[in-house]
Length: 255
Image 1 (cartoon, rainbow, N blue to C red):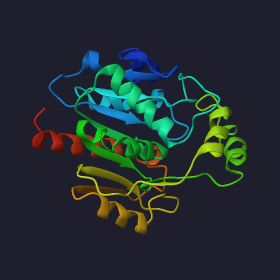
Image 2: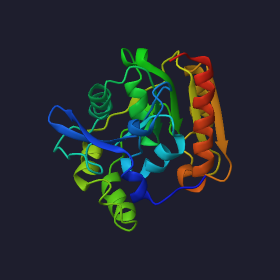
Image 3: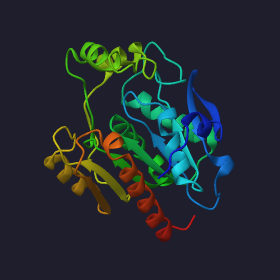
Image 4: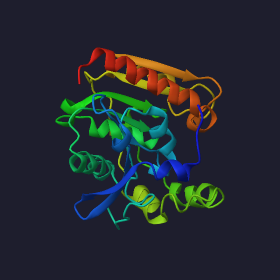
């Protein structure tokens, strides 16, 4: 996979904002270069990730249309004072769906974004979703432990220079408002799970069994050089697995 300069690729795609009750949610859309006969993919980045960090996936999956958003408090999206639980993040996805008029699409969520995608995939949205693709996260929305925000900011965001990706207000909002929600009820949707096998993976064996109970049509791709950071250590392999799964679903579904 040849990935060009991110800045050059970014200008190839449409950038816009969806209005979510006064909160502007930024997205990129490859519709201007895509084949309208192929079902699009909507991408939900991880906790501190932004839409810009998935520009290479938009390029890689052409001519399939892809849309990627930055959740509230991330990237070029607005940062409200409150509204950082599952429902509000799910509503960010729904705002993009409404703005772009998406009718039938695949939904991919990586890491914390997987829980937001799972939350969005419940009825009535389920009727519009062709399949779910989930990257290394259990079928639940997690409540953050006491002290998490301070540690995350000072031990990760600051030393790795990611404070422009997610604002500290959003981190504290997630700490303050997030509640544990199980997202393992049965679903008729086909699903792909991307899972690291090394220490640090967030999908344990028990979580994998929960996924097997949840999805009747389930494909699992394991990455043996990765823990949780499979998008960093084996990004190309993840992208190949995503493309193969989507192409296989296209052969089953009629757009």
